[in-house]
Image 1 (cartoon, rainbow, N blue to C red):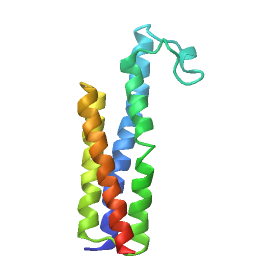
Image 2: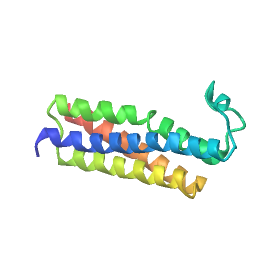
Image 3: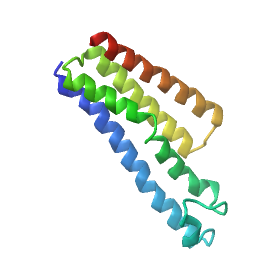
Image 4: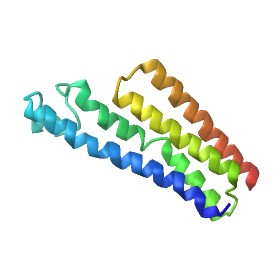
Length: 137
């Protein structure tokens, strides 16, 4: 395996993050055109008047900027130290897949229990990636 392959799961997660980012203005403009919100509802974030379906993309986007930071750091560290191997690559792809499933659940039918199960599993997988990194060093 070439060590630069560990960058591909990172790029996939970046792609997911940008995709969700693009959903935010779509949801906000839809709500504005429907008369559900005004520009003032977003002056200081999101007011209580913002409907839940309009809030979801923003909340999911914030979610993709929180814990995944540790994923990016782990992958970059594996890359820089040339310790990325097939095992780390598989773990990284599993993490990305779980985050994609989490976003899909969150942005579609939004079952909290399903979302929590996937989110918790992704956190365990991220911990395993960090353990893999620790053992590789």
